[in-house]
Length: 187
Length: 187
DNA sequence: AAATCTATATACAGACCTGTATATATAAAG
DNA sequence: CTTTATATATACAGGTCTGTATATAGATTT
Image (cartoon, rainbow over all chains, first blue to last red; front, side):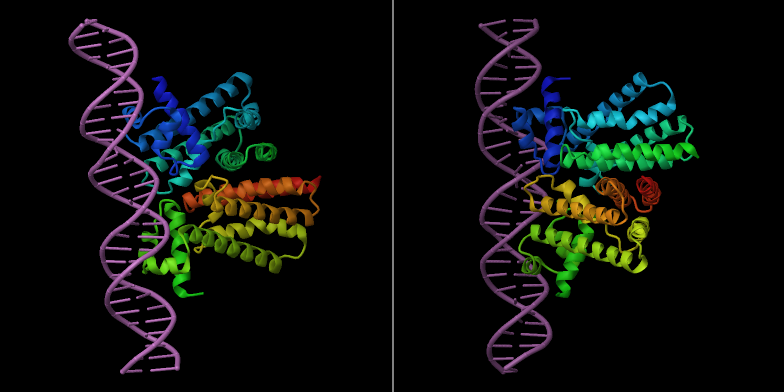
């Protein structure tokens, strides 16, 4: 991938997260990236295309990082679920953290017909599905229910952490997750 | 309050919730409300003023409804905390439910200098504070911690319910809340 | 050295948005 | 009936945004 294209993606990810997607014009993006609109529109057909690619890249990076981390550091399925929020905390508090795109995107694009809404909604569903599969492997009865609860904690904590770095929300989310996982495991 | 003004407020609340705040122009609001821009700008100095009033009204309505409900239906402090999510579920699943304004607003206005961001952030803090006071009265040690956890569940569930009515998220949030409250009460 | 590819600089069309100005209707009150 | 207050209709100024058109500079290849 061209260095300019990836530079634009990085800058857009950052600006979308800190200033909002709709409030960030392409002029601002190219100015910060140190290029021009002509170049941006060479690599992305439209701003919507850029948004979709930012979302796709961010989600892919997160999912890859998380499943790698889980697969290399744990063996037993039950352990994976327990370690999940450990790694999420690590991700969220890392300097590379630029927020979870789909959380903000679904709020800024509430129209269900919007491709941006559809993608972010799909990514949210995928992540919940991933948690649910971990819960299933750990022999938890209501895997979908637990996955939904954990995703509520996750999305809430990420949003809080986005709004105010070092809010500590993720710490309490982790504690809550442990309690919920333990509760769901016993019956 | 003039009927036209309240009509504009109701319509704006609805459109902000379903289409997003930034994506809803004042032309659309007055068209749906059956009036004109001149009238809107008579009652609201600017669109930002309208947004702030929508937020204030919505939050006030919710807080009033909730504390009334808690005060009339329960006596013991510990009961209030237990009943909290019962009533929240009732609120969220009621036909009148038009979402919690501050959740969406804080996502659409991430700039900390924005008055809209400041108000929505303050409302989120106030609600958390209210939960914390309930927890304190129920003699829970880490009242702030539990309040943060419950607010994560609440905000996550409301957002999920906003995005897809009847998602059932609030039901699982309620179950999770019960577990967390019980856990925090025993030690 | 000539041709080609990539990025820049700049201007602009067309759309949309907020907020205001002006003129008109309607209805209540003196 | 006349005055006054309230709402409408409509047009528009000024700004911002996306996306494109045009001309130019630099660098690499032939």
